[in-house]
Length: 253
Ligand code: NAD
Image 1: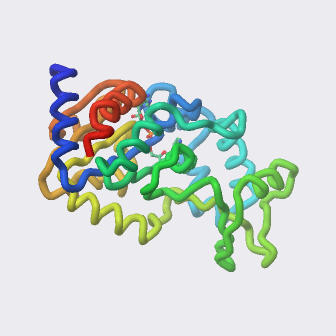
Image 2: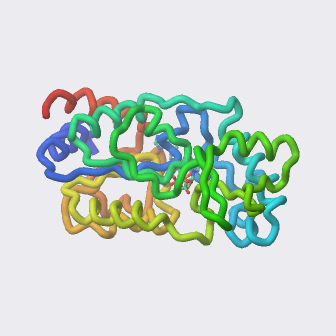
């Protein structure tokens, strides 16, 4: 692969596309200090197991769930407040200038919003909020995490129900509106870019298969299941290639 030539071609495809979207994953936030789940240095199977964060665990044992959830959160954001990195900023530039129609993200860290991206579809929800499954009310996540850290396990809503992080747990469906919009944009896309996702978690990982033609480009340090079918695979750091694409393209529309 000629990296520079492929990057130039992808920039041209993006410029010429009527509809272009990016699907992002945990790799996008790695340079912000948030560890990924899979891939080199991923934290699954280390201290954490997927089954600890299954919705059935939350329903069966909300206190134990919250104990593990706080440990996971503090491992993911040890200093509390991660900042967007060059890749988030590049995608904000590409989206807000109209080159990309939306950022579809699996991340729950809120960093695309923090980078100022106008159109963000949060497929897996957000850590910024918690929701009460009993009465449906939502509130800010951090004060509730503080209550859990102080020993209130599980933290409870005024109605008495245990709060749940407003993220998609294993075993839960994706938020309906976000999933529908992501599927519509994917089907309409002339360019579908994947950045920093292992593409191992369905249904998000199946989105590329819903395209009706057009260009598929994958940026990941490791090989993904779309390596053979993608038009471009860049085994590179998202914080290098995305700013390069944004520099090339910003101001062209
Ligand atoms: P993942 O952890 O499964 O995979 C991350 C991928 O990013 C790996 O394939 C890795 O090779 C790649 N990567 C790491 N650093 C990179 C870099 N600098 N440049 C390019 N590629 C890089 O992440 P996923 O595919 O998003 O998995 C989905 C699940 O993980 C989602 O449910 C998501 O909510 C959750 N998750 C979110 C966060 C977050 O919000 N920041 C962090 C960890 C996991």
